[in-house]
Image (cartoon, rainbow, N blue to C red):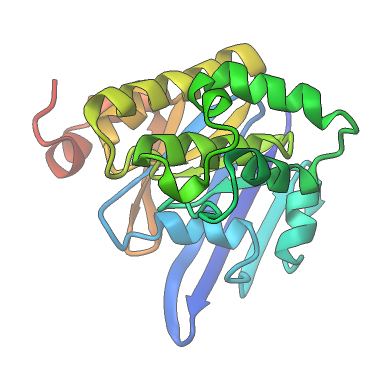
Length: 240
């Protein structure tokens, strides 16, 4: 079996004196979608942020593409090929759609940003129609598309997605999940997904990890987790 693209081994992290992650160990292999599920405050978002260096882990190791990235600054981690789509989108509201996307290209190794822009506009035609519109005037769904598009402009090897469906209408949620599937199937994108909608996340992903109080309590194939009674009772709310 090949080495994982991303490996967290016994990682601890803190916010001040409060321990947020307790010995987290996670593997993500190239070409996979791996999802983290758990209740609010379980440590899902903190895991993604710790991978990106904020907060910095105080124990354990994080390897990306075989390199130990423990302790590196966030910008250096981004330039190694990890892009983060944060919860709440966090676009630049005063910049246009095009300017937001161009900001994402700062960490790109490519010398052809126009080609990447065309790929983003093919993925999200709405963004092509709104290139000159300020980001803050977009709908919530369009802002989520812009946030994902901005991350993809960096041409990452690993995409970290934090709650991409949060606060969106069901029809937009469907489009976002179809886009994630398309990224994996057509672009061979490796994705680590945090998603409150555990059922849809497990339907989409290859494997999953269940977090409780900053610890991994269960992991496995997504189909197995979908059929796990403990997972169903706690996170799937009787969904069939």
